[in-house]
Image (tube, rainbow, N blue to C red):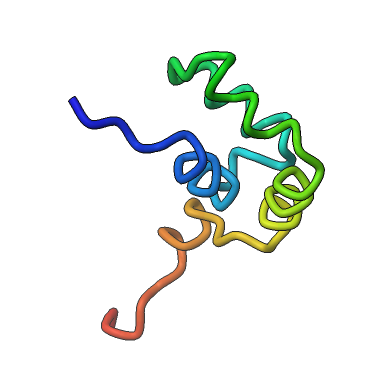
Length: 74
């Protein structure tokens, strides 16, 4: 089975609405079964800062996106 590389997965998680900071990303990775050795990539200040920056970017709210009417509805 090919699993997504831990760094790539971390960036995917950072873009999700569930992760508000690097700590949330690390918890999610751990919950998905990534090892402590794999997660240790995120001890560096540069990658932590980059992930935090992405986590803080505005994200589409899935609940509101589904509730909004489309232009096709008439």
